[in-house]
Image (tube, rainbow, N blue to C red; front, side):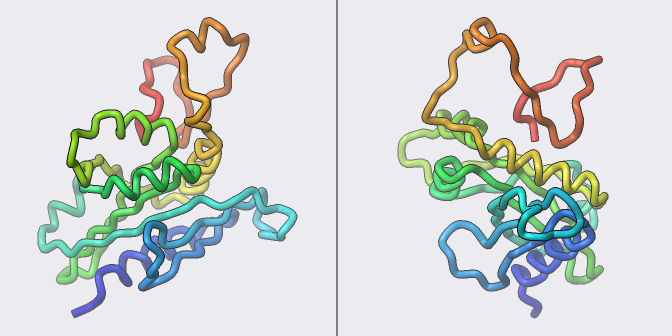
Length: 197
C-alpha cells in the first residue's frame, strides 16, 4: 500500500513547484515534532538569495479516501493538535495542508488552513479544560500559481503579527491608518470577515 504522507507531500511540492517565486522545502517522512518544512518566497523568479522575502512554515497531513464526493467538497474539517496550534502561534504562523488521496482513482485534493498568530489566539480562547485537539475548517488550495503565491505571501505577512502586543477593540479609533492584506484580494463592495482563510 502506498504511503499516504509521501503522496500528500509530493502533491503539495508539485503544485508549489509551478510557482515562479516559491520553493518548497518540505521533507517526506519528516520527524520534526510540528512542521514538515517551509516554502520560501522570493521577490521574483530569479530565486537569488538577495531576492528572498522569507519562509512560511508548513505542516502536511494526508488521508486516504474511497469517496469521490470527498474530493469535491468545498471545505473539510480536521482535528489539529493544540500543541501544533501553540507552536504556530508562537512562531509566526504558517499553512497547514490536508491532502485527501483517492488511491483507487489516483487523484488528490489539497485543502489548507492559513494559521496566523491572531487567528490562532482567537481559536485557543475557545479551548475547554482537558481538550487536546480542535477541529478546524480547511478550504480547497488553489491550483493557479498566482493565487498560490498570493496565499503564501499573505501567510508570510500575517506571520509578522505579534500576539504579545494584544489587540484592543478601540484600535480603529486610535489609529490614523491601517493596512489590509488578503490572499484573495479585497472586494470593498461587500462586507468581509478578517481572518476567514
